[in-house]
Length: 245
Length: 310
Ligand SMILES: Cc1cc2nc3c(=O)[nH]c(=O)nc-3n(C[C@H](O)[C@H](O)[C@H](O)COP(=O)(O)OP(=O)(O)OC[C@H]3O[C@@H](n4cnc5c(N)ncnc54)[C@H](O)[C@@H]3O)c2cc1C
Ligand SMILES: Nc1ncnc2c1ncn2[C@@H]1O[C@H](COP(=O)(O)O)[C@@H](O)[C@H]1O
Image 1: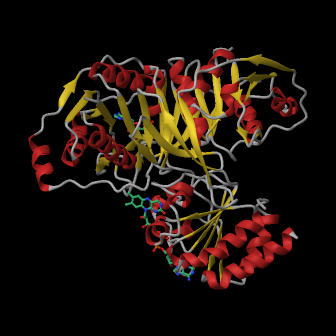
Image 2: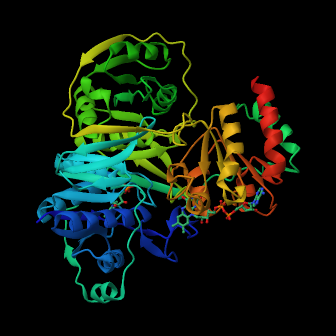
Image 3: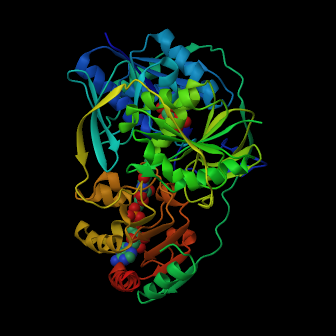
């Protein structure tokens, strides 16, 4: 019975407009979804289960609103859904510590997560959790094989490398060539009824604190030209004005 | 005072120029960093000897550095680096290492930093739709985006020492699959020329490739191009679900400029857009916008650039 855990995070829809009001982002009106790469992590976790047996637990850390992404994962086919109850914004140290101790508690043997979350863009959680657990990790993985031990394909200097990975391990998933399965009616019905197991966690104080959010600096209006012949002038400006070629 | 440590960025067996930018970033945090060079052969570290603004160079020598393995690299570097603020580059590999190193020390990591003011660090969040400034107190690990800080000049003369170190590999390469083309990957390139659905057919990407070869650039693509044409692999995709790039120059051809595409390239230093629709959103982000079909513009661009490079 392989215990497979997939980490999922709720983030603003990537189409959403982000507004900063005062000095904080205001996400109150924003639609929230499962972070895009986490969909690949869920799919890979399910394929792992299909190949080797076992069960898949989807785990998130967040407030009650985050139950929605767990239900989404359930509708696609994970077996259990667990939320570490925490409303606060955490720094990477506090987040990873809470995730790592819960993963231990759950008896996780392999963990899949997204290569980066759509809000932070960080890509810190997978490798950080692996280090805390003393596990192997492989990041930005585009394909996973389950025959005869765990193998992954990930970018490597000048191409891709197929690697064997010691287990237990944390694998962070990029969009590979795999198609993610969509929920079917039965899955959606099961998800409706499914219970989220809510866990309290000891949360460490954060040492990195958010000072402010701001809008990206506005770009000064660029120069614009009509007609293909202008490409010659633009090429010259790239050399003489921008100094980039 | 907190010690500052720069982990040199290694590309193709040599020290990458972003290492000099990391030294400038460290200086902005208020001190002269030591530079630690992960290497299998200590002579690789010699090139760091001339980076001004650093205090010294340590060649951290280990067989573990022959191939990237997150666990082994973090262990080997942790053994060499003193406590303090560690700076790495923000390539995918170095961000991974930064996270591992931080976790190993029970520290927080701040990724993709583009501005530093005293102990306050600013990074793009929400795919570049907002900026986040955080304050760090004491030791942390920080990854810094390329092409943001000026490179420290090479007028220094740093003392170089060699320290042997070791780490346990947790992965093993079984097969290496080189890219079919010799061209750079978008994640590595300083200049990128990308095509979108407006290119009309994957065959027309040869025009982008010709310009890429003239400039030593990489060829990228929008998701619409990747999804529509089998011949355009996902590895070329720039954007939300593709790669985030931060080149000096990004040339977008036949790309409308959807928010998810912008997410991957809006922080490029200079953006050129070629699109036949004057209202395409990409033009709002372009430093140089050319309203024209690629059929008209690319031959002119190619011949002008070829003339310059000759
Ligand atoms: C969750 C999610 C994630 C996504 N992730 C990504 C991502 O990572 N990367 C990404 O790129 N997109 C992504 N998208 C898709 C994105 O929303 C757009 O659909 C996509 O970027 C459009 O690609 P395009 O600009 O090539 O095509 P189009 O929007 O079709 O634009 C084609 C452009 O070409 C121009 N054109 C046509 N003919 C010519 C000609 N002869 N010469 C010059 N110009 C011409 C047109 O005027 C038009 O502006 C994502 C979407 C979602 C929902
Ligand atoms: N609060 C969270 N709860 C569960 N998983 C998370 C959380 N934050 C991050 N993750 C996972 O870690 C991945 C990378 O996140 P990040 O390190 O923030 O880029 C995400 O795609 C998720 O799979």
